[in-house]
Amino acid sequence: MPMKKTNVEKLLDNKDLPRIVEVDDPKAIKIYGGSKMLIAPPMYYYEIMKKIPEGQLITSDRIRGYLAKINEADYTCPLTAGIFINIVAGAAMEDQEYYIPYYRTLKKEGQLNEKFPGGIEYQKALLELEGHKIIKKGNKYYVADYQFKLYDLDNKSESVLVIDQ
Image (cartoon, rainbow, N blue to C red; front, side, top):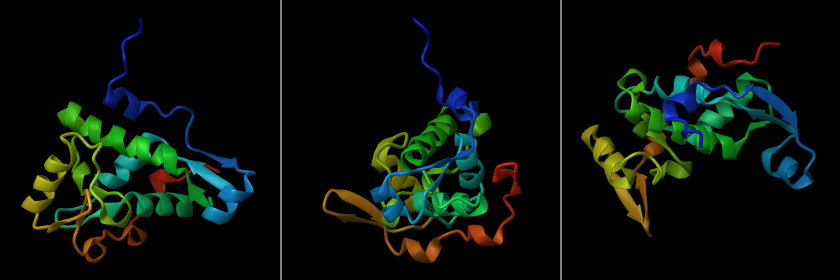
């Protein structure tokens, strides 16, 4: 039986990515505003997530939007984005060489990610150490006023994250 890949191995495996696929599902086209869907490799998420400085935050939606824009796609696959962001977080905790402040990456609307290493409590503690206020809504946790602390990807050069044309 083959051994399960580590998160670092998954991070470094580009799986023939990036690529843009044409989506023909009318519902998806309507939801995402087009048919060109980028599937970005895990390392693209790593490269963005490692740049988020102390005190600032990023959301998975903003990362996806940015990657789609710079790769001239209509959107970035939300399913693989979620998986790959979690791989980045796992790799950060697995190997010090790949450690980045993954906990500064939030889900939609500033929500903490229960799938990150250590779960909500660990991410909450790390964010609070950086001065962020965490609030609970129902059974979910969010960074209060996260939108005022978002890192501006548009003023940064990320040419390494563009598909070769």
